Image 1 (cartoon, rainbow, N blue to C red):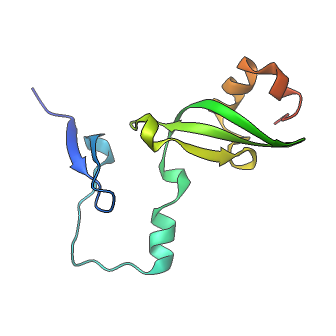
Image 2 (image 1 turned 180 degrees about the vertical axis):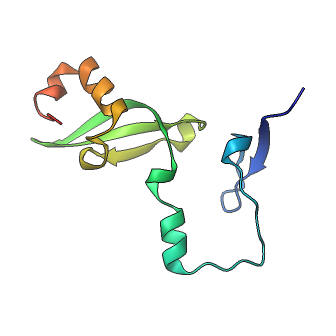
Length: 107
């Protein structure tokens, strides 16, 4: 039976994660990236939102949302501002479950 998941160690945090084979890329030790390349490779667009699990109001019309990433654990959750999530399907689902927010944050 083929193996589709691998245990991989993060190179900076040394944390071990289970990763689906489709998320793996070859590691080239001698490859040196510029700061611009590192920034573009570390984009939030590279991750898929599994669901939004919490929120915190920062003001009358400002809010951060706790995001769970597909294939990651709660230890990897991040707080992301409304403006970065407003056009996503998980945000639509979250706002449907939280009508008190839907009035404030109409997409």
